[in-house]
Structures are given as structure tokens and as C-alpha cells.
Image (cartoon, rainbow, N blue to C red; front, side, top):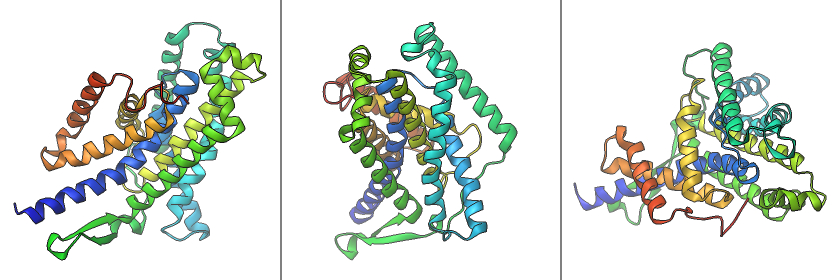
Length: 316
């Protein structure tokens, strides 16, 4: 292999890793927010991603029938609409079920009850999805998936890089949504209340903050953000009702890599996983991508147990 071809392959894999990693980062942010505020290990997070995918699929069909958006913009609009819809679903789920085993209204059972409940929710969503949507793999069809931007490298001698338009737009939307959420958590009054409820629930209660309400909002936001990521992934990744299991492992790995309880860290953890996944294809077969991810995961945990952005840097 010549030097020019090697450089072109490396840059292509690097760009692909950045594009995929940004969407992974948005997934991880949703899970990281829920854990950071509520300290709940949510096994159903991957299934909220799945619901975002199916919501986007059917919404694109409805928008297409109404000719509201063009074929390129409709999937992005559908993914963004999945956020507020799944926010309401997540908030209701917390109010009816999760609130009974978390926060100040917890009946008892501790983390065991939370784990069992979220696992049960995951099983219900997966099997309910199988009944409602069927087992046939689906995808959100958009002309952007079959077209790309051609970016020349430093000189024509090194060739050019292809940037898939669907992944490029998904990356841009993921960064914007992640940045907006980071600003909300850091600067907005409600975001500060969520941080206070995460840092010290008892003190937050004395300051007049409704901790249970904060937990419900955090769970709804985390669910909605992950649903947006699901809608974006659906434009370039086929899915079925059990697809959440494929991604929930990536989410947890990204959250731990970034640092438990860190919003910024969760995003960079997901970005790291995307980069490792794509760059590993230069030396490893496709089947060993996940193995490369967990090698890096174990190295980071060994060298920096608190993650890239540990709790001492930021807490959501």
C-alpha cells in the first residue's frame, strides 16, 4: 500500500469516526443525564432509542404524505420531533413507575428495585415493539444516505475524502443538540436545579427544590435526547425492535469512559467509541470492532478509573 493510499484511508476512517461518534455522544448524553441526576442504571435506555427510530420512521411517512418537508429535511425534522414526544413518555414513566423506587417517594428496595424495574420496562418495550412493529428490519429512507460531499485532501496526490450527507447532517444536529443541553444544564435556572438535586438531594429540598419533580424532568430529557439520537441513527442504520441492545452497551461504555455523572464527558466518551470503532477497521476485521472498543475501555478504566472527565471535573 502506498503512502498516499494509507493517508487517504486513515483520514476517511477518522472522518467516519467523528461522524458516527457525535451521534453516539448524543446517545450517551441522554443516559449520562439520567444517571447523573437520579443515580439510576437504566437498562431500558436502548429501547427508548428504538422508539425514537420507529417514531422517526412513521413521522417521515406522515410528513411525506403531507409534503411538509423535502425528502432530505423530513428525517431530521422527525428526529427532532421525537425528542418532545419521548420526553412526555419518559416523564409519565417516571411519575407512574420509576418515581416509586427513586427519589424521596421511593417505597424501598434500593438499587435492586431500580434495576429490576428498568429491566422489566426494557423487556416490555422490546416485546411490545415486536408485536406492534414486526420483526422486519426497517430504515428511514432519505436521498442523503446515497450521496456524499467530496472533500479534497492537501493535494490531489493524496486523493479525497467522502462525507456521507446523512451522517454529516446527523453529526451536526447531534453537536447542536448536545451543546444546547450542556448550556441548559450549566446556565438555565431549571438546569441548575437539576444539578443541585444531583449533588445533594437533601440540601436541595431545604432550598425549595422539588427533587422528585427534578428527577422526572431529568428522566424525560434523557429519554428525549436519546430518542433524537435514535431518529438520526435511523437514517443510516437498519433497525428492528431489539436494536436497543446493540446500542445500550455502547452507551454505558461511553458514559463510563467519559466519567459517571458528566454530561460533557458522556459526549466525548461516545465520540471516543466512534473513533475507535472506525479506526480499528484499518487493522482489524469488521467483526472485531467491539473488541477494539472494549480494549480501549479497559485501558482507560485501568489508567483513569474516574473516566476522561471524572466527577471532580463536572457533575450533571
